[in-house]
Image (cartoon, rainbow over all chains, first blue to last red; front, side, top):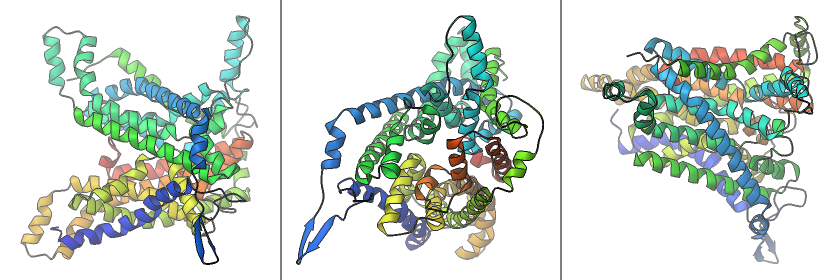
Length: 292
Length: 257
């Protein structure tokens, strides 16, 4: 189809209009909301007053000052980023060998092995969290076994549920496929002759990996890391259900501001910070990807 | 050339175990005759029976199906248009609008849509959830369609044009039939995303518009019961069927994205 200049807009106009209204506009509205006062019964207060023919605006910097006034929120952000970095690293350590194995197996089995990675990813998000609630439950086999072993050494019983560890395991579990897929897409394209050449020249297994496979796969590593890091950073359901009091992330506080304390302006402030962080990570990642 | 590396295979096998063991546990315990998800007592269907007498659960399932069906139809049309437009010409704004919702944390879309809906005085309910679901489904359909177009032979369209077919006829008789597997795969993907969505639905749902994931969330928050295992197993089964069909239709979509 040779598009005339108007026909390309004919195609793109409906989806563009929809996404402008339901994606771009809400983001801008939220930025605006971060400068408004909270409503008396939650929500937002009116942002202008029309009295005796005079229009006055009711906007404030208070919400942003509240963010910067204490180090509570900075610490929360640092902690959330810490959890997200940890989850990303663990995903990489677990996902890399898997992706490599799939990329190096025969063409016929690749599709099946890959499908096996994707399938759990398509099962319901809450079901996957719930599965770990069963595993970590205090009456579950894992906790009882662990405490049995600990008892032999005279150590006191531990609970696995409601801890940052439980939360991290689940974060990794849910996001692992995001790491494996881009890694696989990259590793599959490698020219295996390079490895053969290195072997002929006497390079050992590890040397071949570190000097050839790893550097070539860095763009895949970057892509996978972004795909894991960003959703983990904004997560609230997993910390909510498994994290306990220590495992609170920025997403939990945003949810709390909108659903429980109903301080929407401050919730908007936190959301904007999360938005900027996510955009920065994506831009940084694509920069890194381009350089290679 | 085949490279066998025992260490690699063992670690990969362990990761597969990590991926599947939890889900197998959920399924197994859904048939267990005990309130505790702790040890095997005996086989039973009773949790499934209970499920079909749970009115709230049935309403939630109905809501989920309504939301998914309507969202998928609209998102498929809009997503297909976006995919075609993106392939035809580089439109940076469109590209950004299609990809950004996929790249951002879900919670941001959830809260910002909540603010939008309240601002225009919309009552939160099925309609607000549907509008939200369409928003995040468009991108996935567009990507599926785009992947399909780029694997198409442009010579076919050119040949048809050379033989005198009008652009519309060319689209209807060549492009659209060739695109169909991509469109269907995108639609099925959108369907599972909609049925499964928790985060965005959580913020855009109102009183009485609970969906299956919301229902599971509120049950799980209270206590871990085998009824949740039963509904989880059924959901998994549904997703498995839909995704298998989708991946048959358009394998490229499910590879390395």
